Length: 371
Image (cartoon, rainbow, N blue to C red; front, side):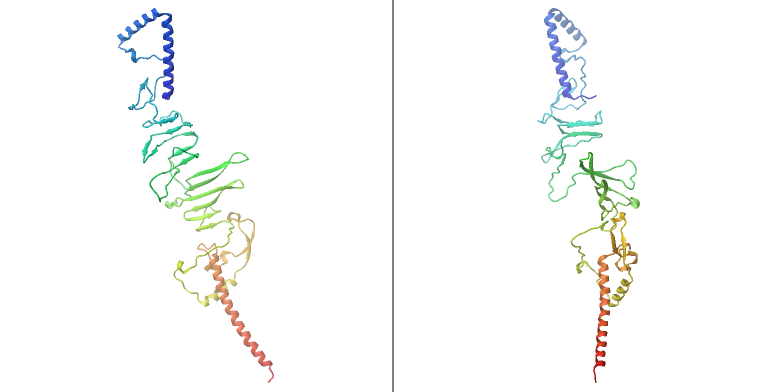
């Protein structure tokens, strides 16, 4: 068991005072016997080759001190390092050059203390490091890069960079085995609720599929909804999903969304290989639209359904010109364009019909006019 040098020094001092007081009382009561005993003792010690001035008998006191390297400001008293810390704070422990990992307990508590381990000075800033293998409790704010933390965990990175993004903290999940699908790490952020306990949200990062050396990571933002913790926003590779953990588009919304407008970029600046559609194609568009079947349906709950009856089409029955790449979605912008093409063909047909009607009307009038 390792005892701090402050406690040992205190025990040594108390023992010395007690021993001196006891010796004085004995000398007063039995002066002659004490003198004779002292002479006999001195003679015995001289014969044994022991110097009296370097010998102190302290009964029942463990004087074993920590095994530390002797520094220039170190005074050895019964194996105890009585060097005062170089900091002005009363409760500050400076352990430069001391191996602080040799702790016989798995739990370490630091309460109302300033702990500076292996301090160095770089650009006027005091720095240090601490390695804890086991449980640790800190009864106050923890400062990293600052001696004045004002949060539970206050991290400051101060350097000469003026236009860069600094990595402030890193959290890694390492495994002693072989990493497999689903390995990852998460951070819980929560608060106590009125019913007791803590309800939290999470930010987690994982690798759902590591086949073929895939390194597409999944970042999930999870919150509670009706007492159920679930993913509300997910970034899978380069796709973003809302209401889904597996977005298959750059923005994949699983459920109903709303807004004041949706803009499709359509400038020539964004396009190449621009070609006009022939008028004959307009009639084909009209013909395909006329074959479509209007349906009502309900979305499945796993795809954001809320029992709302909707009006629309079935993708498998739609013209391929307006389908998504996987054939399971409809490009609304493409469908509008396709419909306008069909309307142009229909308008051509109406115009010809109006011209025919006008010609027939003239002929009827001529037939009815008396000659």
